[in-house]
Structure formats: structure tokens, C-alpha cells
Length: 179
Image (tube, rainbow, N blue to C red; front, top):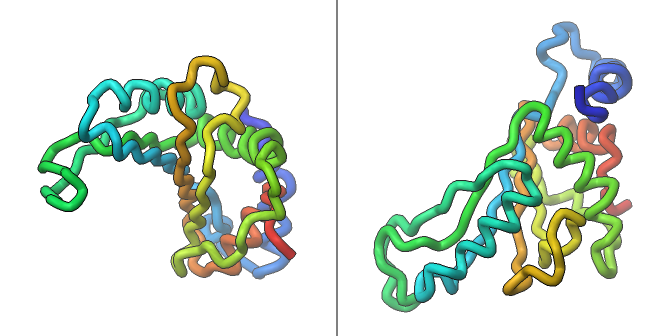
């Protein structure tokens, strides 16, 4: 069992029940999935560019990402329909908790000039979005083997009804939000 899943059942869940007064144990918010998306715009001209992004995302997430393709053509971006534009991976269950643990305890402290996550980055339905400017903050990525420093978007999906519940859930996992 992942360390954060055990912490959720032993510590975070009882605190949420106490704070919000849930009667049904299934009503307590929990993490459902984490989606990591890495856009590779230059892959539309050169197909080899996406291989480095796929390799990095595989090392970070621990599972092979899906290559995302464009849905429609946009002439200004020199983009045709069904061209590769990035890669994405969805983490659930044990891998999700292990990734969140590495994100909070290893990757975020390594970000330069980090002052905390924005607490307003919720979407109104209890999901949190954040962006990283470089993938090299994860120790799994070998700095010498990367072809280009790329950013990524991380979406943490919960089944919380409100943003306040989701914020309390993520604070229970020690996510470093700005004060």
C-alpha cells in the first residue's frame, strides 16, 4: 500500500469528516486520478521530437503515455488534423499516490523560486490544475539525456463537491499552498 493512501485512511479522512461533518463515509472526498499532460508543439514538424517527451513522461509517471493528436487543422500553427502535438498519461490507484508523494516531497521543493501553489487554481468542481516549467525537477529524468526542457500540466481530480473540500483534501496531503 502506498504511503499516502495509508495516510489518507488514517489521518486525512478523519480530519475531513470532523471538519465538514460527513454522515456517509462514501461522501468524504478522495483522489480519483492524476492526469499529466506534456505539449510538444514542435512535434508537428519533426516526429522524433515526441520520442524524448514520451521517454521523460514514462520515467516520471511510471507508465507509458498516450500520444495526443490534433483534432482539427489550424493554418496559423502549421498544424494539420491528426498530427502529434503532445503526450498524456492518466494515473490511478497506487501509481497516483506514489506520484503525488514524489511531487510534494521531491519535485516541488526543487522548483526554482517556489513560493507555494496558487490556491485559486481549482475549477469549481474540486479539481486542481498546476503547471511545471521544466521536467528536470523530477529525479527520474536524467539531465544529460534530455533533448529539450519542456513543461507539463498536472491535473489532480477529486470527487469533492466544492473547491473548499478539495483544498482541505490536498492540504491533508501536505500540498504547499500559498498563505
